[in-house]
Amino acid sequence: MVYVQTGLIYGLNILTVILYFALPTALWKRTPGKFILRLKVRDYRGKAPGIWRALGRETLKLLAIACPLGMLFCLFQILNCGSVWYDNLCGTDVDHSSFVKLTPAQKNWCKMMKQQQKQQ
Image 1: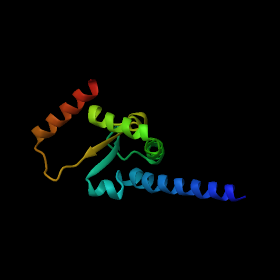
Image 2: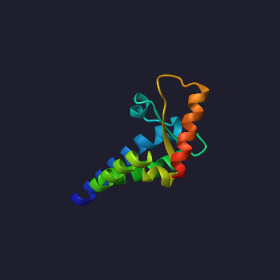
Image 3: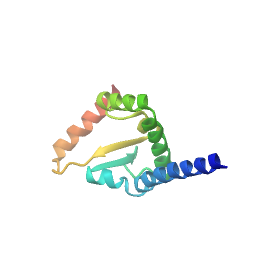
Image 4: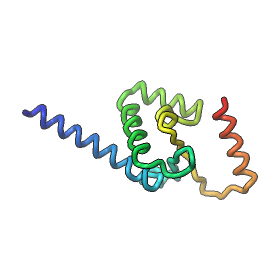
């Protein structure tokens, strides 16, 4: 009986963590931490990812964080590709909003560089 209660507590904790990250991501494109760092999670159309896409992303991210090799693999992917496997799998992208507004020419240059990275 103790094992069942412990399993339920662990399951509820994991569910709470997933929902804590997934709901703000689905509704506002960001969690409180992403808000402070000026990061936004968006889908391939540039809109908020939606509840199912955000739930999938956060669940896969939790699996990657739970495994030490998964964390190293994610770090390697961020440094080389600019995105991680769970973002690619869920069709999401993390975008950084700078404190300084870019000119239209700078925005076009950033867009062109992102397109070149995706082609490689």
